[in-house]
Amino acid sequence: MTDQEPDRVALGDEASILYWTSRFDVSREELEEAVETVGDSPAAVAAYLNVDPARRRG
Image (tube, rainbow, N blue to C red; front, side, top):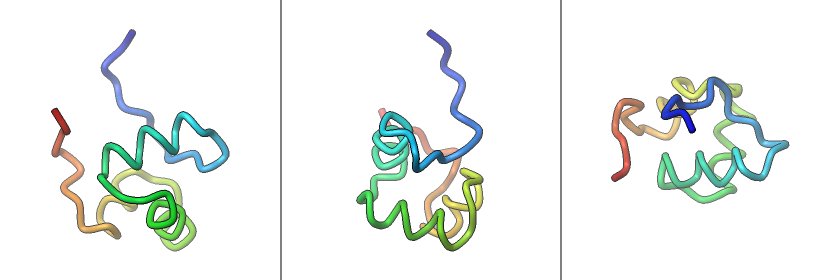
């Protein structure tokens, strides 16, 4: 298994949704709103959610 982060926030994939809601510590609805507003780039979504994209949950 790789430790590389996905390069897109894919709302059509349940595993992606679970990963990103956990990674950004947000609800599914917040994640969906962010992606609908700024697109599926993790950096853009992090900026919209005001989350440091380099912060790793541990």
